[in-house]
Length: 259
Length: 121
Image: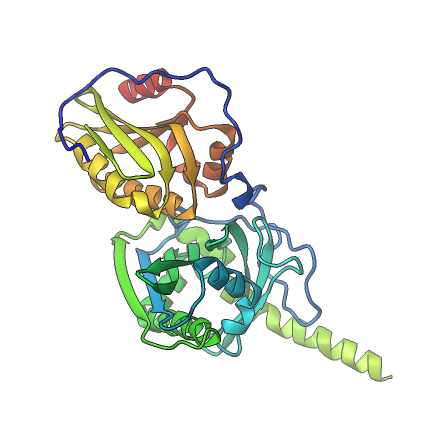
């Protein structure tokens, strides 16, 4: 590394050679920022996804956090690519009970949209994610408007010495003031528990176990009050408001089928 | 100033006392964090108002790389600096739009346009 710091002003030469498609092109979602669910299972609640835009941490409301959960797959003889392939294939089964990930039949691939039916604080919540990026050793899910947080989660695996590591890294802000309050008063702990469970499940799949480490960094302590109106899309509120009508619809269907 | 790791090389230029350019060549992934952070530290002087990232030499970027740009942007906002970019191919422009970074990072086609915008702002 050359650390000689001296001011320079000349611009580097620009080549006229036509560019070839970059190596990462196949790994990124090739779509717009609006989400559409192509097919939803009959038992899934399909709310708060169709037509919603994905949101980065820059469009969120609350403090920005980067949380990195990591587990060592001690004793497992697998490559990072094998870990990620397994994680992609079995993604929903690694989650805590009561939470459902309805991914596309084609699996976790760039540009695909998955429905999430979660339970937060005893309440159902329907939202979704976009598979923003996926390669052999990592994949990233990006959230839409109304989700608890604005941002993305990257799942990756790599070697640390001879030991494979499984990692989930979240870069996020709470999407609106309600979620920010929820995260502050127990939501972060709940999220930590969620991803600890997931990483333990991944490790158990490979016959490994051990502690999940968490590194939490507050990237930005400021709240973005200009984005407080994100509350309009709040998926928890909308799912709760929709619950009575969904219940009646199901009741009607059930009654009709029995007649 | 030039810094590098096996996959990415950055080069800092001081266009004016208020404008610095960071030329990025190679791969922007999680492994670029230290290099990019050092480059930002070098590019950011007491008088720096705008930092311009030159992506003309960008060969590969993954989602961790996008995350690095987000955290860099937050750090710059804290110092009341603006982040501009140029030299993005259509592919990387699409990624900036998809991740909605284009709403916070000012994107230009050429360095001349970026510098002119920085001077005019």
